[in-house]
Length: 346
Ligand code: P6P
Image 1 (spheres, rainbow, N blue to C red):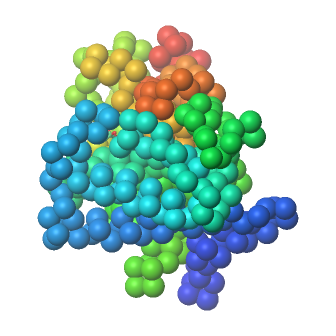
Image 2 (tube, rainbow, N blue to C red):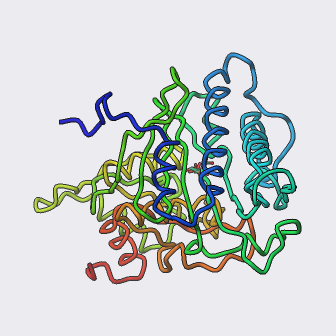
């Protein structure tokens, strides 16, 4: 039987957010409005994304962003849409974005309370746009600590460990467009019905399988991985008559949000370890690893850097990177065991 709700009990993201808000009697509605602002920007990015090939907005702007990568036009456009939506909404006082070297303070005198900080990767995997491979947005929301003034928030206010997040989510612009997020009470997935412009609850109470048969890693770097990791990858690909998940299957499309989302639903592990060219790994702690780590944990999975729980890492820089092992709990624990030289521990 399908887990999809029948037409009788369609629930929009807005209705869902308001239901959740009712669970917090003293809530002012500011957080609900913030999530609404984010979902609006996601719909706009989705609209422009689906026309990328038509209105010639892909290809590079020729400028380079803080990552030194050639900035794809869609990256810049997605960044702008989220900043505009958050500025208009007035609930966010500070934005940290992969597309901008410094944190961006927003003038909150307009409407909202300006009590929230949003860290985001506006468009992860954007080099895939030109070849029509799916991409995604990742966001992480913190509350402005009481000791800071929303009119003068500074970067330190944003450098909180992942355990302090109050919401984390992603949008995957794939064969359909989905928004998946958590506020600490489980994970829920919404699919965009473009005919009515609404995200509809399609994956209530998402949980991830405890183990799986899919591993996602760039095998091209095999010779630069640490030994324990090579041993783990070799182990995964050995036949074992007692283990239906070995040999494991590799699925890696070069778009973290899509690889993560597929593994969340089917079971699997995504790994971006330290390599020679990326000694700290490639994924960013604040707006890629932390939000996805919370979603993974809330869905029953696990996320570490091979040794330390991602959400307990103390941030020092907005764009700092971290090695990342994330997904089904048993697979992440097994990877850790190999990395720590104790493969038979689990
Ligand atoms: P590599 C995209 O640039 C990204 O940040 C992730 O979305 C993706 O999983 C990874 O980098 C791909 O990196 O080094 O394997 O090409």
